[in-house]
Image (tube, rainbow, N blue to C red; front, side):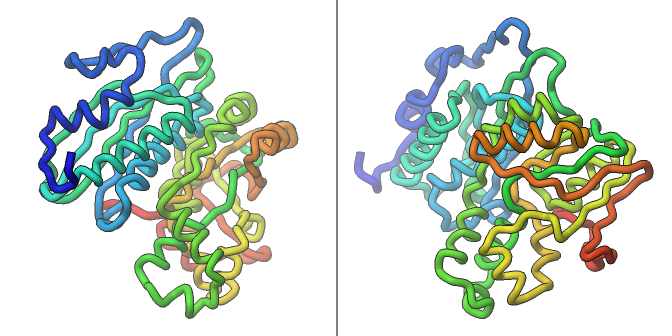
Length: 331
């Protein structure tokens, strides 16, 4: 099919989505799919959307956008200790899409399905006057009763994060200000690392089993480290203390913050990290970090839960000011 040729809805489904369909999807020929939980397991469900102009830029490649849509949902499953199984997809297409666009979207979905061991179970396609959007409902599984909840933190628990924090928020700043990387004196590989982390999250699905074995409370960091730990504090009925100096930063983030120290606030509050924010008994930390390390995932203790309420962030023992709400908010 020539790139300039129009592609109808059912042609699109046959071309892009039928090859992605998993068992129970019935070849996408029915109005619904079915999924039978395996004996002894609970299903875990989560839903996130990515929207042009909000979560990605209009000129981003559709292949990368498709990956981001899947990965932000897989991150939620990992925070619950759930192994991913599959997903449903609602796709809103702008009027001016091309065959190359949707082929790229399908390629991104197919590659990440292989990467994370998941399948498509169904969905919907609609016209979107406001630009491209993808809304994913992801499905995972855990042993019965083993899902890690946001409200599980207890006084005395260690607070642990995976990976590095702030890269995506700094990458967004670079996208919004084309000259910022040069003004900060970033090397090309540092700039590219931050940009990539904004567009392509790295969901910590490899750590899911360790999360459910060791974490008492968990969520992923999507709206900002400080604000998301604040949500955990509120759900758990505890106070949370964070040592900003212990928060793991990539070499690229460190270089940016060294050039402009105010960017530390961006890193701590900016969102789009899609790392895991966890609370666990101090005695569990060594085993958890070792299991994560074996899976190629770094894990770092950054604070502690205590009796009380709210979040306190210190830097060198002094309260860190200027945090605002601590996170991104849509409304």
